[in-house]
Length: 329
Image (cartoon, rainbow, N blue to C red):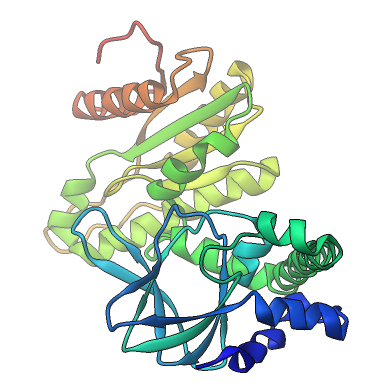
């Protein structure tokens, strides 16, 4: 290909405001790049000193996974597409890799052995216009992204909720707590954990359906508490262990909530006797602690409360207990 074929590079938005003479300068400082199948166009971490217009072939952009050296394809470009213009406009480093799916031909700007700094010495006004247009492009894309986020906020929030929702109870999963705890914690934050007493007896005697129904009723109790408070997250941890996370909740309020929770679990309707199966009444072991008062390391507070919950449940439960750093279950 000779130089006139490089005029296709002018399709890029980056050059939309240039005059004819300035466009000719851009074309003259562009070059043709031929890639063989599998050859890299750029690699993650490399500076975006050029951008490209694909004339022939396909280019795939992918991210290498370090765990098993596999690949996640992010995008695929075909003839007529520009590649890397946004990274080039930002003078950024690429955050992914790009390689030819098959033999490919591209126009590259600036061409080989040229840079924007060298072009600025030749035609400062042209380079200034390109840089000015790049700033406008970045601003427009940021505005467009914000608009998309606002338009799809409710949908994104619903996806976020579904990803962290326990399907059996509608409570927040423990993974939500693991992922979001740093943005949730506000001094003081109360962690209140609940384990229903004798739950195995209920399931063994009446089946897993009875256990599932019981968890639904327990979840309703937890959600009602957060609704009354107007804050907090009702959570399901493991198996039948549930609880509450309530930020801006001091010791006195946390103790009151823990006692109310135990009382409301005990007030759940008893499962009536059936043939030779005795009636089952609900009680729950409740443990609570305050971050950072009882332990200023969140993970240690969580583990301490959980260990105390299991130990107290084995001893019969029923009595709400407060976790403190120096308590050994």
